[in-house]
Every structure is written in C-alpha cells, then in structure tokens.
Image 1 (cartoon, rainbow, N blue to C red):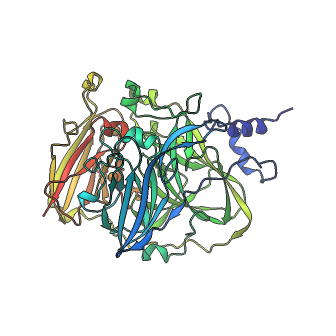
Image 2 (image 1 turned 90 degrees about the vertical axis):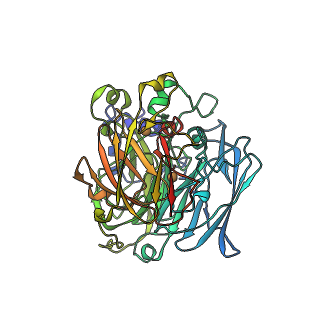
Length: 497
Ligand code: C2O
Ligand code: CU
Ligand code: CU
C-alpha cells in the first residue's frame, strides 16, 4: 500500500510543484520527519556559477553572451530557452563597491535585446533600458562605477515591448555587490554553501516541454503566471545545508506573480536585507512577501537539524482589496520552493549580530519637490490602448520628467486600478515614507528600488539621484509586472545638472 506521504512525495517529484494547501493538510507535517534514505533521485538546487570577472584596464570586466539554448526542466523533455553564457538564466556577477566594471554583452540571439542592471545608480547610457538595444551580432560595452551597498541586484532584458517574453525565456541573472561594511559582519557568506541566491520564477510548459508564453487578453491584463515554480531554473530541488545558519538571497524573478514566502513548519527567521542593502538591524518574522523584481535577504536557523521546506504561496490576493479581480486572481496556489536538509556536520554560527549596518531612517525634510504618479489600467486597453502612468502610455520619444541631480524629492505613487503594481524606479535606491499616510513598516525601511502599490493606495517614497546627468538619455520608472511594462505602464525621466 502506498502511504499518503509517499504519494505526496511522488507528486512533488513528478514536477507537480503546485500544492493545494487546503486539500492536503497533512503535507507539511512531513518537514518534521528526520531525513532518511530513499531521496536519491531528488535533484540538488542549481547554483548559478559565480562570475568574478577579470581585471583589465582598471576595470573588472565581464564577458556576457546572450544566447539560445535548450534546457531540460522536465525529464526527457527539451525546452528551447535563452540565457546569458548558458541555456537559461545567467551567472551571478560578483562585484565590489567602489570599483569600475565593464561589460561586454554580445547578442547571439536572432532578435534585438538589452541587458539592464537593475537597482544601480549609473550613467543613463549604461543603464541597459529600452534605449540601449543590442542588435543581433552586435556587442554592447557599457562601463560604470559601483556606488551601491552590499546586496543582491539583478540584470535582465529591458527590450521595448519585449521584456516579458525575453525574461520569461531566460534573460536574467543575479548580481552580488560586496562592500566592506556588510562583508565584515558575522553572517554566512560562502556563495552556494551558506549564502545562496534563489531566483523564483513561475512558468508553464506545453506537452513537448516548451515554455508557454501566451499573449491572451487575460495575461496582458493580469500578467503572465505559470503553474510550475522554477528556482534557479530547476523544479522541486533539494539543498543540503552545511551550516546551521543559512543566508538566502531571494529574488522574485517572475513576470507577474507575487509570493508569500514562509517555512513549512512555520518557523520564524530573520529578515536582514531588502532590495539594495542590509537593514540597520535584523527583523524577526515568519514570512516575507515579494512582488516581481523585489529581493530579500533572510537568515534561517537550522540548529534543530530538521528538514524544512521553503514555501512560496501566491500572494496576489493579499495585494488586492476585494472586488472581482481579487477572487479571479487568487487560485490559492502554493509551491514548494526548496527542500532544505541540514547536513550531518554543520558549520556552527554564533548569535546573529544585533546591529547590521548604518542606515538612518528616511528624512524627507530636505525634499525640494514633490511629483505624483497615477498608475492606471484603463479599459481602452481592451481595444489595443496601453496601460498608463499619469494618463499616458510609454513613448520612447517623450521625456515625462526632468529631475535635478543630487536633490531629494518625494514621489507619490497612486494606484487608480484594481490590482497591485510593483513600482520600480531606475538609477536609485529609494526609501519608503508612508502608505496612505501611515508610516512604512519596519520591513520596508531598508533600501528599495521596487515598492508595491496596492489598489487605491497612495505610497510616498523619497528619491535622490546621486550622480550622473544626461540631458537627452532617460531612465525609466515603471510597473515591474513585465506585461504591464510592455503594455506601456512606464515613463521616462532625465537627470539634469
Ligand atoms: Cu528591473 Cu526597469 O527594470
Ligand atoms: Cu531597473
Ligand atoms: Cu502593473
């Protein structure tokens, strides 16, 4: 007779990563069971190779190639994909605060593409947005200085109207920026061992194994979601932890899905960092919510030696405020993102440092200007119109805002639509001030480059574009649901002297 647990395990192995939490109440008790044999065919988590680049001509040089490939996500099924130096996704670029990097990006695809360095303060010409397309066969070689703090950033396609499909098929990767202040902390920091990037992406597969990216009206409205969760390009993977404390760097690399991340036994953990850096102090919690493009660094304690699963539940419902769409959008999906198994001999860590880095609370008193951005999904969209910010859809020929370099501004983002939008601003790590007048929560007090704006909500952020001016070349601000970005929920700003 096949026991319930075996059935469940079998389902997980077969690629059925979706777990209807309501119908399988016993499922997660499994995490309390000691790990024993019989798990030989569980595949280990993919760790993207760490690429330190090479020193040349006073810069750290990275050679990247956008290429086509074939991946095997599902056994004996081949999936055409695209990636960077690889069939799907790209290496983790490792760089250091204060140094200069130079990228050499060769486009070996048969369509134009871009690579955008998400989260960085850099010259507009190096940004890799829609104004820096790389034609097939061409090479793009931007160079910039790393002004960021230690954190995980990422890079991805930002091709005009094609970011959705290009990222979906694999054009993305992680970036580790290291700085002295965060490196000297007593935190797990061995890449792939106790400091692990997890790129979460939901995907759908056709019967031949092909990725399904459908431009249906529903998908254009809600964004493209999939029924299978990939973590670092793998399905249903296991991680053998060699340390009693694990640092996970979570990146929601999905096109549109929001995740609520927690552990199968409900254990609490520490949030230590947000998009662009570490928090001033670790924050104890039992879940984090990540919208597309958001990152979080967490520390999980494995001292009890018990196996535990990282769960990723669909969180769009928590991002809605009632209404038809709320019900339509939440299918109650819950994925097992990662099976974590503490190894026998684990490196021991002392107590978590109480203070992490210097980060003063945001201070809006020097703001010289206020701007307002209203996000909307007008129904004209159905007839081929676009999504809008301040009533206008993205137009590459139109500069929407001109900001003065080195000045503080308050940006007020208002969501006039019925679904949540993760609002992203290029060229800056900003601070969240308040939501509908209520001060930002502790978890949002870190450095951010994406902020969720719920329906009918008004969020104020403090922005300051520290360096670099260009009168002509703009940066973007946009919704990071890639289908919304592609449909025009994006605007352009220049930073002038
Ligand atoms: Cu992550 Cu404008 O992009
Ligand atoms: Cu960006
Ligand atoms: Cu949106």
